Length: 196
Image (cartoon, rainbow, N blue to C red; front, side, top):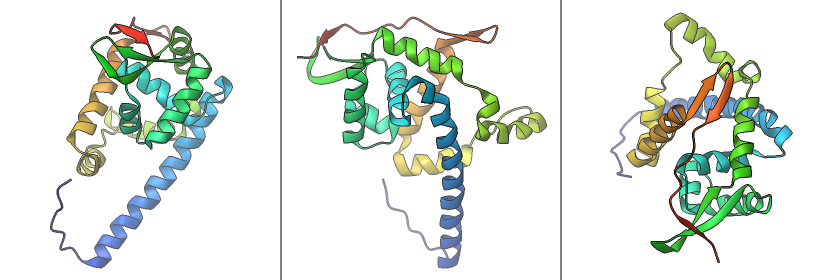
């Protein structure tokens, strides 16, 4: 990331940084609590569920991809992926044209469990969602987070935001909702071989 010349008053910098820290911490505490309650019946933790989601979205991801997109350390991505593999939810494979990297894909059981977690989502128990509903009712849409996305883009780079946007778009396109039920579209997996 390119370093910028920041000649702002120290007091302003501290107030902004502290405000961002407290708001982020408060939001994360709520998100973490709600997310864990959502997936607890499936015997998953947040990292495991996030990895399943990334594996679905990227449809064949390296550990580095999972770490990058999941904003987690590589060892965290690897260790939790191995736990999911042991449960039969992920498979580690090689591409025919890339024997160097190991790719992670959802198994049929992993895809099914992921869909079950999506079906179990209850908007009435997700406090951040409920906190945004009054804005949707007032403005006709949920917040788009343009300022926050700009900050994250400057921290993690444009590629991170582009991948984030692409994954959300893919999810919206790949998941059908009918009569309150979700259905995942069939995945077009690239040819894989079992990892040795």
